[in-house]
Image (spheres, rainbow, N blue to C red):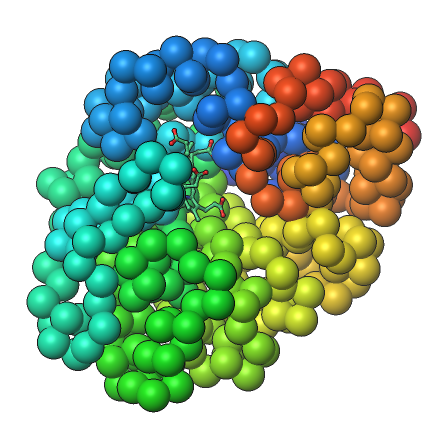
Length: 358
Ligand code: CP3
């Protein structure tokens, strides 16, 4: 097989490459690209129809269904990138931690990890056999998406570790931090293990055809910069640099990260996600000009009247000031009851504003 025939072959970025891929490389675009974290999901009526028949995991396990759900927002909203429908917690299943999405409770991991013995019991993960359904969904999508780039993703080691230690979602991350501070050996052993599993999984997604990958460190803002540097940065760096070595752009995302941005940049990523707590221009200044940024509308703004939404979308675009390397997104995922029409309106506002001003 020649390089050009392999699924992960990336042609050099050309003048007619998608605006999303160009922005990842900080190249000028005619309009600012826009997509949304959690753009597929319960706020969409088409998604709810499928969820009436299938659980979240059943959708993930059936590549045709996962591909269909991935395509729903691409068709309905006209976004500039598709994000694979999956979940950051899927690798917990082959690790042997046990995953269930309980109604109204969010994720439940039945065998949380607390001791070195628990870490040792975690099973090795082969993405081709253990998470092959995700890779199959990517292969189907690359055939269907044509010019719209496909984003693959995984959780960052810290955020995945927090679920595996807490056994589910958490506010204080007390068990997680207790392991870090009281039993650092076990913490480092777990992070080492997770960084290998997540790297292999992300690289397999790139080989299957993902054209960009995003690493979600959604809850890392719970840490101080010192703790981030000691307990998290080396492991995120492993995952991010392995993905980068495959030649695709890498997006590094977290929330509540204003004091961590410089360290997240050091850990890696061509694009760094900004949440709404920092004005986009201030966040970009903290990071420096040699990196692209993604963000950063507050997801709650999508519940406001259209003129208010428009003012806030324009404010973000003015702060980006037409500088190459801005991908418009929310500061975090779309919320459950978000009006679809408002999401669609934001896509149009971004494209219209940037084609006039940019
Ligand atoms: O459209 C997309 O963004 C792709 C699909 C996607 C899902 N999860 C599907 C999903 C993505 C990118 C994720 C990532 C994910 N999963 C993250 C990181 C992003 C973030 O929001 O910070 C996290 C922390 C998870 C873990 C997770 N999955 C939680 C905490 C929950 C329950 C909370 C909730 O919203 O109910 C999930 C469930 C989940 N994953 C849903 C979806 C669409 C909920 C909808 C459903 O049950 O059908």
